[in-house]
Image 1 (cartoon, one colour):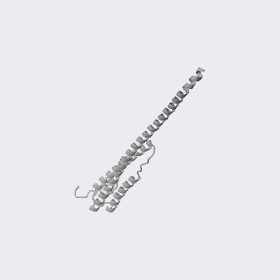
Image 2: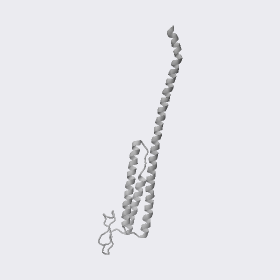
Image 3: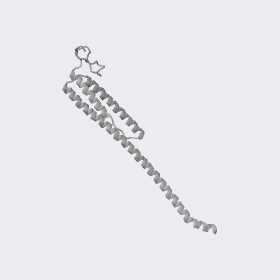
Image 4: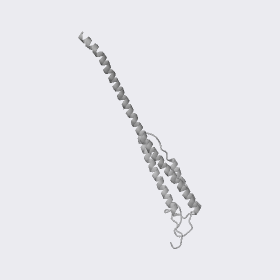
Length: 169
């Protein structure tokens, strides 16, 4: 690189401006740090905007898949930002701050994944409970029909001798 510090172009750095020919960068280090922190905070805000809504089964499945898609997008953005950060020349303080924020984001993403897995388990459990309720209802209806049939049979057996008497006379 002929002794000059290499600066990525705006396109390469995802918005961080600079030059390839050794000129002074147009974005200061503190501005670069603010951009990185703003992007990290945006990731956190997107995570907190994702809400799981409980509703009908189809609606729940749609929400589940949307949440999983949003989580995947968050992970991709995180990876993108981390690759940008790794390519920039940072001071030790900036590296420590970025490590701290990266760890925090990783914990948030893990928490979201855990919550999604837990919600999936709850949906399976809810479906099983709904099936059991349907089976109980069917069983109750069948039991009621059997009782009515038994009562009709008992009533017929009680009335049969009397009907024979009346038909003989």
